[in-house]
Amino acid sequence: MAHSNGKHADFESLRDQAVALRRSGHSLRQIRDELKVYNNDLLNQLVKGEPPPEWTKRPRAKDGLRAKARELRLQGWTYDQIEMELGCSKGSISLWVRDLPKPERRDPSEQAKLAARKRWEHELAMRDMERQKTKLTAAGEIGTLTDRELFLLGVGLYWAEGSKDKPYARREKVQFVNSDPDMIQVFIAWLDQLGVHRDLLRFRLMIHETGDIEAAEQYWADTVGVDITELQKTTVKKHNPRTVRKNVGEDYRGCLVVNVLQGAELYRRIEGAWYGIVGAVRPDDLPNRT
Image (cartoon, helix red, strand yellow):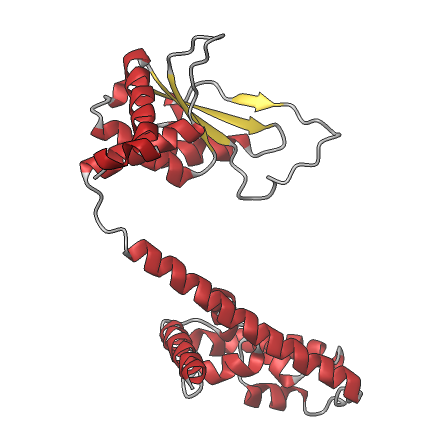
């Protein structure tokens, strides 16, 4: 019974989101993509009783929709599939394609496969809802960070991703490199808390030659709040044809390098704080932990 109630609650939560999107002017296809609900039956249930937005019914769009609906019908698409693709009502589709031959009926085995696929799509949608719920709950538990919490977070962040001094190569400098804009922004907020003046910060892009360098430079300049002319000369990495890269696509923007000028003393503070954290978690130091 608990499982059933949980599923019902999941459906109601998903329906609330779908209705809100529908009322804000989203088509069925847009709602599908936004909520990642790829099961036609489930999607139709989620927006049941909600009229389609006016923009999907514009007279100038109908001729194109009608032609596309007929083309898809001739390819064997069902009403549900056409509705999902074009975002128009089944009533309109029926009027547009009623003179066309019906798609051939699938054999029982194919029907069973289709039903199984729809059940799996529904299960995936429910799982995705659970994932998002867990993430949102965890995010809500953080609340406001104290100065001490942000300080400790920044020390750990730097020690994981920043440049470090080595006995064989003294590099007491503060340099942070990352491709995640959120990481960069947290790091800069941490520097602000430590009183590091923005005039001491230098930014440089590192990117493969196959990336959109100009767009990436503008993206990172906007991310850190500087004019693009303030970025240092970009470091372009030559492509090795023997290497299969995964970081490709429109969202690839390389890495941003953040350097802090005159950072030797700050680096020593970071290193000292890190080893203070290490010492605080050792079993023999438990009485001193708060």
